[in-house]
Length: 141
Image 1: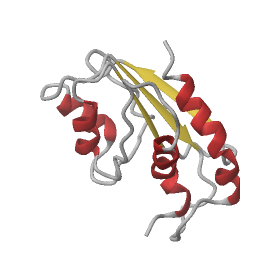
Image 2 (image 1 turned 90 degrees about the vertical axis):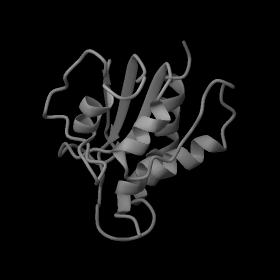
Image 3 (image 1 turned 60 degrees about the horizontal axis):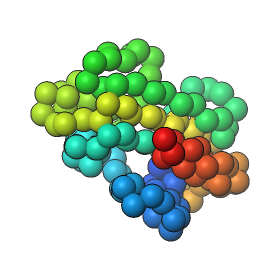
Image 4 (image 1 turned 120 degrees about the vertical axis):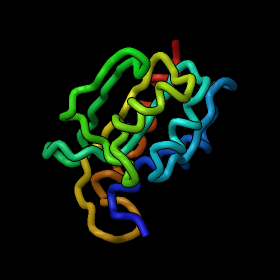
């Protein structure tokens, strides 16, 4: 059971798996486990992560955060919870263990609802093509 719009990352991954993407691009559903996401990122040049991100903005708003996890300590205001551990905490630990990419892009999407239920709100469902385009724009050099 998903928490409504909290499933945006999973649904974006599933949609991207159906797209024609460059051969050097892999798409994974990281679910809710931060260290699994680090495993997927291990050895990659770049990682793009999509998740719900509550910033109290307009539902469907897209926020992009870009950084080098090997060298930058992120602002604590960016608190992406992967449910098992805060993603920034996982990155801090993971940069000692994994060959992390030199660039991580987080595409955070303002949720409309985080109530229990399957499927996205109508607002985020209508934004899914825009989110997919946002991810795809990160895949070109």
